[in-house]
Image 1 (tube, rainbow, N blue to C red):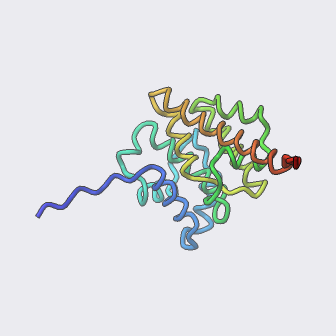
Image 2 (image 1 turned 60 degrees about the horizontal axis):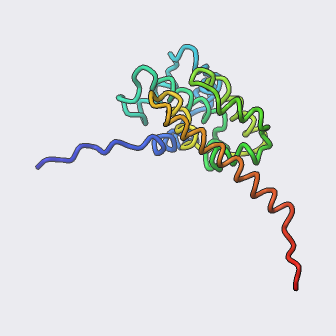
Image 3 (image 1 turned 90 degrees about the horizontal axis):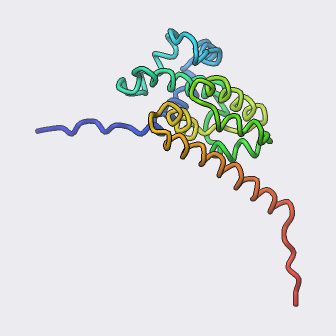
Length: 184
């Protein structure tokens, strides 16, 4: 009897699985601290990182640029673990709720993959400092889009973040000043 090959997981599901692992008490404070200090643009020879990636990320995704992409995500999730690293609003809406400035948003949206190693951790630290939760699927979508060879994929990811940011702004403005309807 032939068994079907394992289904390839979606990156968003893997991002959530990584977040769940980081929340486990058994993960340990030492490895978590190591991942918080990780420089995604530097050396990635960290046992805690590779142990976590080996448990959740398919080997085929860890080639050339893939390892750096997943290391960046793990670093971001570690910054918010164990309480604020999952369950948040989509990235644009969370950034608006936290009071992220429009100029900082513009820099983040224009960042290439190398600049994301610096700007995305800053944005996530800002969110976490304001008590906002991270949204792992949105983070991995942006990271992978910035590494993609198809510029349309990155443009779509950037557009989704901007759209969510400005819709959240619109909704906040509407909630702050409800339109009064005059009775005729």
